[in-house]
Every structure is written in structure tokens, then in C-alpha cells.
Length: 488
Image (tube, rainbow, N blue to C red):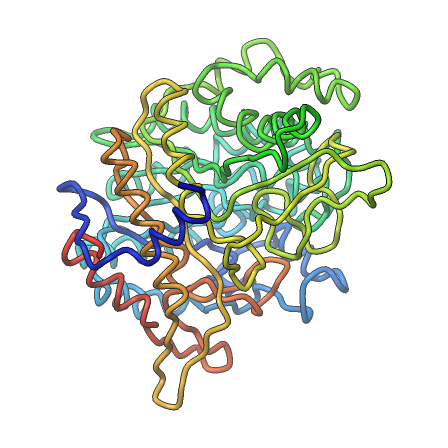
């Protein structure tokens, strides 16, 4: 069956219940800068996203995260929403500049107090707190000293991880170090469409390494700080990469992009080193001198779970001589080669054309909907790499949905998207993949990075004028899935 036909079949399958294993973890996620607001309260200092948003023209409509979904003040209301949905777990991130305003030195107790209150509220409702230490909001003070381009930032990240663990480790069992290092490195340092807004491909490679090194150092710090039963993870944005044709040139292009998007991050974490072909592909940009003796051993510090963030597939081919180089045919929130401004996030991949798969539906981001890609990705991780439990740490879609006069939000496209992807996760489990849980992205409509408030990923609608929350049909559907531990 073709991928297109398979995706259509998954979306239109008869009403057959697919039951998940006992103990399967059902959750939803957010990120601090996207939902918290309160950027100047209780000692929080500026992050690179505050600085980036202040630059004219880089975020749609001049939007910022100054208020966002006001989660900082409305967390109790949001925890009640989670309880109504029946979530087993809530994945949130801690704001580094709220906890450690300068990125080093003393901890801001008032900043950590917020996460104390949030974690206590979750625990009181029987919801597992799942904590991410870094979801892109680097303290501006660290950026002023070189940011992720500076090796010292990785060491500072480990100190920050230890401080958070010392305060919250008695109640948080599942920890994620870094969310999507590919995005932080390449979209922030090569494409310039994410903070800190730089366009230096060589710097983006150094930043990628220091993000991975910071992860490894943080794992070691967490192991030494936490006691009892804890699990450590990292979350990667991964995508199956397909050649546009079976030509040798297109196949080699797919190999190169797969190397930079997937293998450059998976293999240091799980195999202990960077892929040799990736090193060679970008030798013209760097001599890899930023990789010091022992770094790859640190990066490969054992983790307990690998988080998989999946949204859309990637199709590439070699650029034709007459073509105008474009990193992607369409505008979208960058995940696997997509930028809204035409700047390439790929370090050293001139001569690449990105294609939109034909015959597939699209989200409001312009992303192709291909649930089968999630199955292929999970199976690849299961078959090609050392055994490690997996968790879907992000999966979801943006659609142009709004509340009616009664406050109801009908989002059938999102329900179809989620149902089809959950069917593929069930198929992967049936095929032997050790998949432990699923987190929908996201709990709330929020500040969608350089797209501002124009793109809505939430299963809860947020009216940003009055902060009113309304559970969308997708949230009510997800509630029923969780209650049954099964999907139709």
C-alpha cells in the first residue's frame, strides 16, 4: 500500500478499538515561553526570546511572549483543565532565566517557587509532572557571553539542572534535558528565524554540539542529585527523509539531510559518536575542533527514555541547475527544513530542494499530514539502534479553529489527525516497539514562536483578549481516549 493510501486508510478506518498497554502514559505538553507570560515578574530576567521578539519584523504582528496564555497566574485553572481531560501527565518546561536570571550563580528562589506551586497542584490532582529543563529560552546574559556557541554554556546548563533537581526532584520522576536541539541550533543560528536570530552555519554546528554536550553534562548532574526512581530523557524532532525520485543524486541528497536532521543527534546519544558521513559532508564548514576528547562519551551518558517529536515527513531532491535554491516549498513552523523566510536552516547543504508530498492533506502550517511517517520513524529507532524505551513527547497540528457564540470549538481536522497518528503508534507497539506514552502538542493555544498568536496547536482554545479557556472537541475526544485507554 502506498504511503498516501495508508494514511487515508488510517484516517478512515472503521470503528475498531485499538487498546493500548496497561500503564501507557497519556499526556499533553507546553513550553514556558509559549504559555507563562509574566516575563518581568518575581525576578525573572530577559531570555533570548524576549530580545528576539523586540526586533522589528521577526515575529508576526510584532507579537511577544509578554503575556502569552498567562499560565504563570492561571496555572491552577489550567491544572483543573488537565484534570477534566483526565491527563496522566503534564509535560512543561522550566524557564531558565526565571530560575537563574544570569544563567549562573545564585538561584532565584521566587522563580522556583512558581514551579513548586505548579508541581504541587499537579500531584494533588494525580497528574505526573514531566519536566523539561530547556525549551529554547536561554538567559540573555548567557547569550551575551556567547550563548550555545560557547562551550561554557554547556557547563552552566548542568549547574542549572542540578539546582532545579535539588528543589523539585522529590516530586518529579521524569526529566527531559533539552527539547529539539536541532531547532535551537539550526533555526536559531543558521536560518535566523528563531532566537537568537543568527545566520552563521558554522556557528550552528558548534551550537548543536554544545547543546548535546550540555545534555550529557546535565544527565550526569541529575544522576548525582536525584535519588530514588527517576527517568531521564531528551526530546528530538525527527522525521523520515525520502528522496523525491530514485535517482542517485536525489538518494544522496536524502542521505545528507537525514544525517543532519536525524542521525547527527540520534547517533551521538545512542551510539557514542557523530556519523562519519555527516562529519565529511560538512568538513568545508568546520574542522570539528569544538569536539574535545571525551565529549562524545559525555553526550552518550545513559538515558532511560528517548522522546520523539513528530509532525510531518521530509522529501528532498538534488536542486536542478536552473532552480532557485529553496529550503522548502511552503511556509511553516520549522521542524524538518521548513522556514517562513526562505533562509536555509541546513548547515552546508547547497544544492538541495525540499518538496511537499503530493496528495496529502495539510495543516494550517502547510505541513503534509502523513501518520505513516510516525510508524516508520518508531520502527527505525526500534530496529536500527540499541534498545531504549520511546515516548511520543510531541505530536499535534495547527488548524484555524475558533470558538462559536457558546464558547464551543469544533476541530474535526485535529481529531482526525490525532486519531490517525495514534493508530500508527498502536501499530508500532504491535510490531514490537517499546513505546511508553503519548503527549499531544499542545495543551493550550499559545505563542507560536515566530508565528506569534496566529497558529493554534492547542486542544484548549485560548481567547488571548480575555484569557478565557474552552476545551475544544479534540480535548473531549482525547478525554474519551484516555478513559478507555483505546482509540477507535
